[in-house]
Amino acid sequence: RLVDRVGESAHLSVLHGRDVVYLIEERARNRPSLVTEVGVRLPADITASGRAMLALLPPAQLRALYPSDAAFASRTAPPLTYFRLKKVLDDTRRAGYATEDGDVTAGIASVAVGIADPAGWPVAAVAITFESGRPRGELAVAAREVATELARAIRGSVPPVVE
Image (cartoon, rainbow, N blue to C red; front, side, top):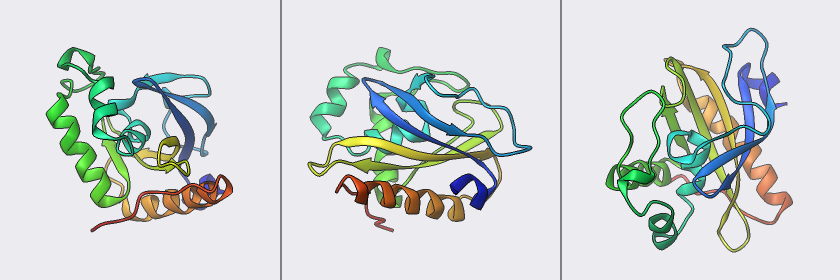
């Protein structure tokens, strides 16, 4: 339903250590080719899905995952540092959704909303991937609606929008 509604590809992923693993992927017709598909693992710090889930972690757990700058990956841009990641995750918490633009594939962007279990730990993220330059607002809202529906099913939650 989400892909039909927004006309873009969508994904459901989980956090596994410092990686995201894609569990479900639905490709929209006539959209750009993506590196993701079911079972693919990518570094969490460069994906919108990963950032959405990392933003739900307590600071001590985040630091345990990223004990030094050597823990960060890069595909198209210089790797993040711990302090830059913290800023990205602060921005994610404020907005209520995560973004990435060109960090996985040049010219491709994503928005994602994390889903927390009843204890507040990340269990999954819903993401929409699209060509860079497309406005994100309606896509973030659509991802949030699906994430909220899934969170209700597990009696979990999605992060609030602070802005």
